[in-house]
Length: 143
Length: 154
Image (cartoon, rainbow over all chains, first blue to last red; front, side):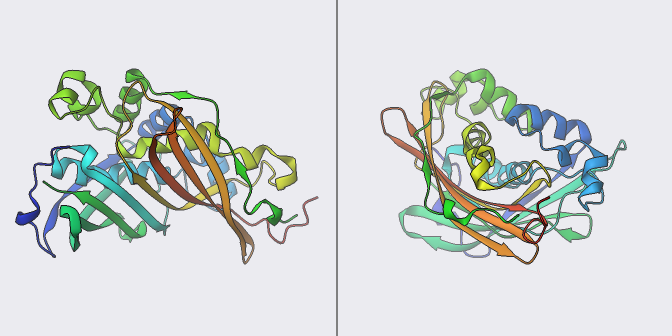
C-alpha cells in the first residue's frame, strides 16, 4: 500500500478535492449489470413511481462508489481506503430520463487523526439542492 | 404481514466460492466511471505492490448481491416480492483489498430487525474471507422494506 498523501501533510480541516459526477440512466443500467442488482427502482420509472419515488433512483451502492472515489483519487492507492460507512441514505439520487441526468457533488474534509497514520474523512454528497447521505465517513491509511 | 423477527441471530454460510476475475473487476470499475489503472492493468497494480489488479473498495457489495439476500428467498422470513427494498445504511471495513484471483466465501448473520412505523428494517453482517479462512473484509448493511409492517399481507 503506497498512499501518496503523507500523514504529516494533513490536519483536521484539510479538504479532499471535490468531484462532480454526472449520472445518467445508462450509467445505472451499466451498474445494474456490473453488480447484478436489477431492483426495478433503478431502471423502471413506472415501478419507481408506484412506490412513491419521483423517478428512477441511483443505487445506494453506486452513490457510495462515487463518494469514495474522491478518497481513492486523493491518495492514489485505492487500497489505502480501509473503511467507509454511510449512516443513512437521506434522499434518493433521482435520475431523470433526459440527456443530462443527475449531478452528484462529493466533498470531504479530515475530521479526526488516528494512530497508525490513519485519518477519518467526513464525506458529503449533494444532488441538486439536497444532501443524499448523512453520517458518511472514510478511514484512510496515509503514508 | 410483518417480517419474522425470529431470524435475528441466524447465520448463513460460508457460501460457495466467489472467484474474483480481472474482467469482473474491469466491468465493475468502468460501470462506476473509474479508470484507475490499479483496477485495469496488472502491471500498474504490481507497481503499487499488489499481486494482480485489485477491486474498487465498493466491490465488496458484489457478494451481497450474489449471496447476501438469502432471507428474502426463505418464505419463513415473510418478505414478499413487493414492495421493493431500499438501502438505508452501510459500513465496509477492509483488512486488505480484494484482488483478482481471490476465491472468496461469505458468511452472513442477521443482527437486528425492527419496525419503523409502517416500514420494516433489518441489518446484516457479511464476513468475507478467502476459502482458506483469511479475513478480507466485513460489510454491514441495513435494508428497509417499505410499508409492509402494517399491511394485511393478503
